[in-house]
Amino acid sequence: MEKQLLLCVMFYYVFAIDLPPNFPKCKRSDPNLNKCLISAYDDSLPILAEGMPDFKLDTIQPIKAGNMTIGEGPGVVSVVQYYTNVEYYNLHLTSAQNCEATITDNEFRMIFTIFAKDISMHANYKLQGHVLVVPIFGEGACSITLKNSTIILDIVGEFFNKNNEKYVIIKTLNATFDPKKVELEFKNLFNGDTEMGAEMNYILNENWREIFHDVKQSYEVTISESYKRIINLIVKNVPYNDLFPL
Ligand SMILES: *[C@@H]1O[C@H](CO)[C@@H](O)[C@H](O)[C@H]1NC(C)=O
Ligand SMILES: *[C@@H]1O[C@H](CO)[C@@H](O)[C@H](O)[C@H]1NC(C)=O
Ligand SMILES: *[C@@H]1O[C@H](CO)[C@@H](O)[C@H](O)[C@H]1NC(C)=O
Image 1: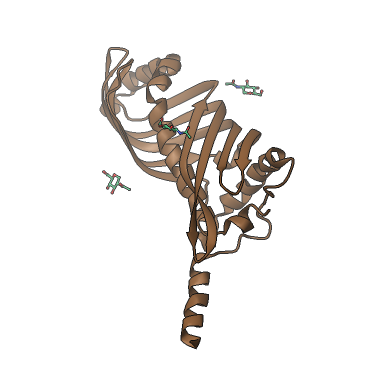
Image 2: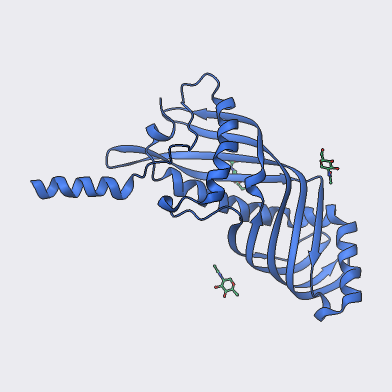
């Protein structure tokens, strides 16, 4: 009997983790829920940037997104691209502009509009193909910087029960990026031929709209997966009624 009780207590602690006291919360009955969530987004970022070791969450500066492969596209970028050690920088400096949320006992959806002044992706790349019919190949470090982006985060959750407690988990998260400008830098193109490398980087930046259009979806998928993983590390460990109190 005592042993059973002890086991139950242990299970509870294994699964539920307390949020830090300064972590923002919104009541789901709040008549100004959307406004609360806009502030909560901004206020949670410094905490996420510090990392939350109790939740096994590393800092989000940068977000480490692993590897990414982009196949030959149908547009101007017919280039097979392999990226390793993909890192996203400065997501902790973004800010929520709008939120449309439905957070009830049986529905969970938040659509955020975010402004990002300057976010960048750093990675090692390896690529080969044609950009605007010009041959391109190379291997090295690259950075892609998005200026003044509007990001839409469409987050849909579903519920599950654990130890008689209700939890929410993010089922789909779709991020879309709409930058005002994109700056691309690929180092060591053409086996380090500096003249051809500079020429190609010039072509890429002059045509950033077409280039970005072709690779945008792969970036969005990679970053959506990262966001989803991060949010789920937190929400799957905090009962729904603690996360979004009544
Ligand atoms: C990423 O790619 C590198 C090189 O191909 C490989 O060594 C590494 O295991 C990959 N990492 C992941 C998380 O798949
Ligand atoms: C980004 O927005 C700032 C502030 O509104 C502006 O000064 C800057 O020129 C913009 N940059 C681009 C690339 O649109
Ligand atoms: C998210 O994107 C996927 C793939 O484009 C789509 O199938 C899905 O319906 C989208 N989900 C939401 C909630 O927008």
